[in-house]
Every structure is written in C-alpha cells, then in structure tokens.
Length: 70
Image (cartoon, rainbow, N blue to C red; front, side):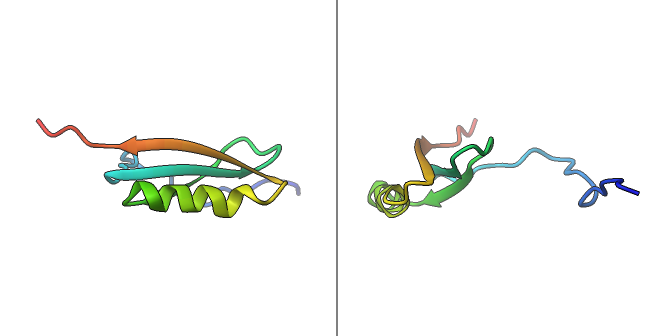
C-alpha cells in the first residue's frame, strides 16, 4: 500500500508570468526553484541579497520578463 496519490487534476493552461523581475531560490540539491516576483529591479536585488546570506540556498537571478502583445 505504498501507492502515491496525486495532488489533484493537472492544469489545462500554461502558467503566465507577470511583467516584472524574477529571482529563483532553491535549497541545494533540489531540482526546481521557487520563483519570486518583484515589480522593480531594486526589489529583485533585495530578494537576492535576503536569501543569498543563507549557505543552504542557491539564488539565481532570472531577470526581467515582459509580455509581447501583438
């Protein structure tokens, strides 16, 4: 009885990112980061500094995301 149950029905639409700046934070050894969002570049840098002091965290600055409307 070690059957792993799924968390629910999978999403039908792809996730859409907001316009802004993103930082990926993960624990060392983990495969996927938690994406953190800020509307400003200064906010993005503050998030990176806040989590960068922990030795068990890996911080990756993802950069700016802008949607192209057309």
